[in-house]
Amino acid sequence: MLRHYLQWHIIHRCNLQCVHCYQDDYDAMMTYDQMIGALDKYEKYIGLYGYEGQINLTGGEPLLHPDFMKLSGEIRNRGIRLGILTNGTLIDEKMAQDLASLSPVLVQVSLDGPEEIHDSIRGKGQYKRAIEGIDHLVRQGIKVNVSFTAMKHNIMHFEELARELAGHGIHKLWWDRVVTDDETLYLSTIEFRGLVEKTLKLQQKYKFISNDRALQQLPKGRCGYNCSAGKRLLILLAGGELMACRRLPFIIGSIYDDRALSDIIHEDDMMKKLSCQMIPDECRNCK
Image 1 (cartoon, rainbow, N blue to C red):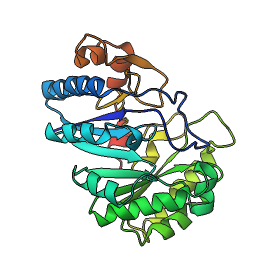
Image 2 (cartoon, one colour):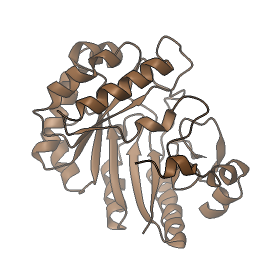
Image 3 (spheres, rainbow, N blue to C red):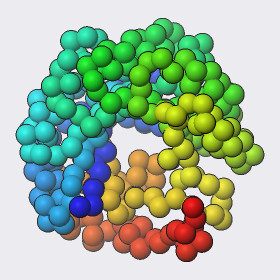
Image 4 (tube, rainbow, N blue to C red):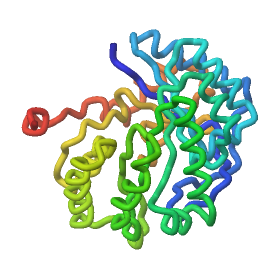
């Protein structure tokens, strides 16, 4: 059974102000009734096409939403897989226990380097809070993925972060380069390739390092990653906007539209174009 992913930004408010944040609205938040209506539409959509659904709740910071646990419970009650994307700073022992009761397939926590580097990006004291959150989650038996956003000023600290995480029982440390117009943050092609080569070598020592997402932004003119945008990925923002990908500046419709979700998706020209993209044979057969 093919899996479909809904990345659901249930709230745009956040307790941090990261230097690379692409959020341009910090006020939007769905009500519980609106979220249930959206969930109803998504459940019908995956049922129509026979998908196994996975909803990754995010924000802003999703744990700030007053109905986070209530919505998460409803998602699980409907047999839909649940993932949680968080900065980890709000997770204490009680919260970790509550999250464990939901049986999420993963909780992803963002770390952008060792303490000094991470705090320079996300705020003083946030590294320790995130690490404490990770430890609470791991003690509850929750699979924890750590996400590293690669920027000019932190890529040289990736190995140090991996070394620090080695004793914390995480499932995966994966990385993705920052998407921004700010040239002081964005990696050059040479820097990107250098990080790919470095992390491939580090995988021999740290088995939890993953390059699964690194190929989705290869230099221009090459395509080595089968991006799921427009196929089996959908973004839902807290204002109800629907997107193929959070990093593509195109709104394809609104979840509050009277039309079925399948009609919203398949009648949009951008989604039609994205759904037709194929992997070149030379990439498909690459070992």
